[in-house]
Structure formats: C-alpha cells, structure tokens
Length: 423
Image 1: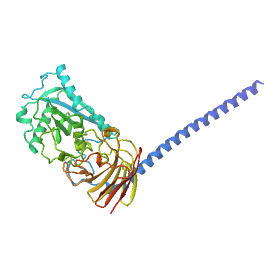
Image 2 (image 1 turned 60 degrees about the vertical axis):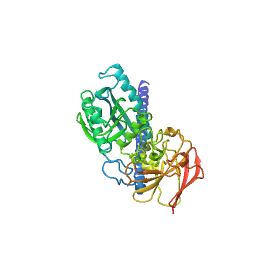
Image 3 (image 1 turned 90 degrees about the vertical axis):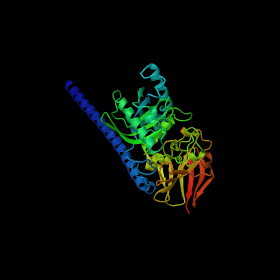
Image 4 (image 1 turned 180 degrees about the horizontal axis):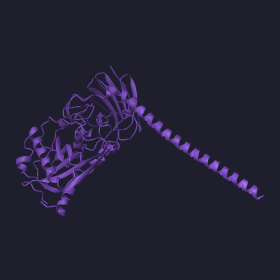
C-alpha cells in the first residue's frame, strides 16, 4: 500500500510539473504575441508615415529664401534650436552704469525679487505655450540667473537702440556677448541652446525684442541662437514676446509687415498686421495676442505629422478637418499652386489659445516660400484688413480666389467638412 501511495504521489507531482510547464509556455507565448502585435503596430505606423511622406511631397514647399534665415518653407535650418525634446534657455538680466536697476548692484533679496518679477512677466508661461502648440513635442526649460549683470559700458554709448538695421543688430550682439561673459563664472552654459538677455526697465532706450543668429562660446558650448529685449512698455514685452522670439529661434518668420514705419512700439497701425491680423503667434497682433499657431508652421516644425496633412492635387475634394487645438485627425488641407505657393485650410474653434475668437470656422490662407520674413510669407484670405474673425468660414460659406474655392459643407463639434474645387 505504501508503494502504491508513493507511485501515486510521484505521478501527481509529475502531472503538476507538466501543468506548470504548460502554464509557463502559455504565458511566454502570450508575451511573445503581445510583443509581436506591438511591433506590427509600430511597423504599420512607420509604413503609414512613409506613405504619407510621399503623398504630401507636392505640398512640402521648399525654402526659397536661403541660408539660415527664418522662412516659411521646408526644411527649417539645422542651425536653429531643436523643435522637439528638451530645449534649455538661459535667462540673464542686465543693467548699465548709466541706467542702473533700482535695486542696486549686489545680489540682495530686493534685487532677486525684481528679477523674479521680470521673469514672471516676460518669460514665465512661454514654455507652457510652446509645449501646447507642439502637442507636447517641445519642452522648453528656462534657466534664469537671478542677479543684475552690470554691463562694462554705458547704455547710451554702446547698447541703445538709436541706430536701426545693421547698427542695432551689432549693438545687441555686443550686449549678449558681454552678458554671457559676465554670467559665465556663476552660470553653467553647458547644454544651453539659446540665451535671453533682458535689460532693466531703467534702460528705456532698449525697447524692441530681437532674435539673433550669432555664435557665442561658453563652457565648451557653441550658442548660435539668442534673444535680447527691454523690459518697459505698455503692451510689450510679456511672455508672448518671448514665445514669439523663440519662434524665430526655431526658424519661423515674422508674419506682420516689418516695412511699416513705427511711431512707437506701443502704438502700431493696422497696416502692420495686414497679412494675418489676429491669427498666428508670429503675426504679433496686440489686440488678440493669445492665439494658436498656424497649422503650416506646426507642420514645418514637425509638430504635425505628414499623416495629419491632406495634400490635394485632384478636384473636387472633400476633407474632414479636426480643430487645430485638439490632438489627432487631419489638421491642414494644402493645395499646391506653384513650386513656391500653396493654399492652406485649417479649422479654428474657441478652444485652447483661440479662446478670444468671436467666431468659429475654417481659415484659408496662402503660403509663398519665396517671400522674406516680414514681407508676407503667409497671407490670410480676408476682405477685412487686417484679417479678423470675419475671415473664418461658417456653414455654407465660400472662399474664392483665382478660380479656386473652399466651401464649408458641414460643421460639427468634431470639426469642419470642407470641399475644394479648382479652375
């Protein structure tokens, strides 16, 4: 009897081992299948991207302004700051022997407080804005040095804005170079992609915010992009100023008319905004500054994938657009006209940074990659100049130009169904 029990026990253990082995095999096979399914999904995504890349080739207008300038075409210059991942931006505060910050020369609590206030006013929130515009692709980290850097020369002689054009550019580059040199002993510039230099409010002859291309060296790092600005003014600067200038560091052009004579930085005529009006960060409108960036600009920067762009070369064509602030879906209809021009249609809603829009609908604009920054590389199709909410097409409304027409066939919370016809 004892022998029989032993035999039965042994058989039971063997059966248990066999059952356990089968369970382990099933688990391994299940993990392998899940792994394979994930890999297949990745490959399908890659195939879809490659297919889309070919399909939008006719709409990916090439840059025709050359060099490392800002432009509205493809590709963005590799000399610009990265448009994805983490980007580190140093923020330096400067005053001058003849325009001293009220808080004095030493790094006192008052001095730190004043630089903190300027940082909150001029810089803070620019990182969040760009992260939202990039659908989480770009993560800007600002690294401020909270002390006043006393410039080695007087403002009135070496740094002020009394000269325009090339003169002001050279003065500002000198300002940035001197600021970096003064900060270097106390600030680690390793991994810094751009530098923002902010002058004390007492330096009232430094008014404009300017983005620069110029090489600076510190801590073994080459810094090719920078921004300089004053800190006084009724409307500007604020954190949108910083976001706008970082747009230039990213490679985007000015979309307002830079040729219009300015009486002051605070009182600009409507002519300045005649190209895009209240639409687009790079348009610089003060009346409605908190706006979404154009779908075209986001595509340039890689924030929109090729699968989110409908390149239309045969007509008529109907496309369902999803609102620009939301994730997923088709964000832009692009109709190539010539090698350098195209029509673009996108869906704008009272969402995100477009919360001040007075109307929702489809927005139509024209791209010309042969046009320089500040001369109208993007022009919104509108009878109102500067373009305002009336440029947005509601249900049944039609936009016509040169034989092309865009008709909004249907409007839903999910977006706009648009139909495009050609001559």
